[in-house]
Amino acid sequence: MEEGVIRLGIFAGAFLVFALLEIFIPRRSESQERPQRWSTNLILSAINTLMLRFALPFAAVSTAYWAQMQGFGLFHWLALDPVLGGIIAFFALDFAVWAMHVASHKVPFLWHLHKVHHTDPRFDVTTALRFHPLEIAVSMLWKVIVVALLGAPVLSVVIFEVVLNAAAMFNHANIKLSEKADRVLRWVIVTPDMHRIHHSTRPIETDSNYGFNFPWWDRLFSTYVHDPKGGQENITFGLKEFQGKEPRQLGWALLLPFKALTHVQGWLSSRVNKDGTPKAGH
Image (cartoon, rainbow, N blue to C red; front, side, top):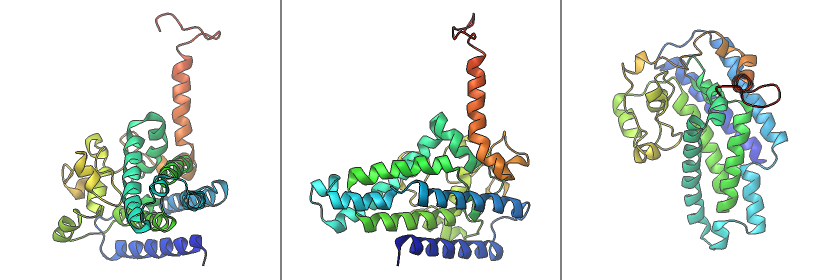
């Protein structure tokens, strides 16, 4: 069976499980505007899936195949044992994704793309699917570079991609775990309560808990926050400047990064003359 079909089946199964759990054990009551929000987030996911399938043929798994055939990458040059290489590659890829996530909050161009994800006014399993196509393309390019340089084993990359998708849906899910379960799980995986803090409107909380699979990178680099100010039930989601109805709209989400570029262009044009020379005082 084709690898893509297997991944799609696991993705659909995981989504269904977490969507059902949100009905039976919700962390918060978040039923408002669900039809429009869900349709926007699901359509974004469909666009991204089609783009990765047809517009970006050299995705992470394809790159791993290429590296294997060409004997390219660190693991091939060192003749590393495939099992050991696969384990190292899995954790290295997780760190790379964490680092890209941090960069997406610190580098203006990346943030203009990533904030589409953060403008979701609610927090549930579909939030895990809410990414701008350009961010998906940039993130995939980053993974391709890491996979190629490592010469990561194909199986390891496939497993990582499947786990990453499932983990993202889990830690964005609006499900309630017992305090004891959450406390124990936080040492090995990112839980919904942990990642929910990252979607707070408070900047100090938005800039924390970047992990998707493992919580160790946040603990190691001091970006871990255990509890939100005011408690889980009182977190306001999204970004302070986007608390209206617009974030629920598909067209708005697709155009948001370009609006930011327009603002930058307007700011620059206000500081130069028509001939390109700086205006007085600038």
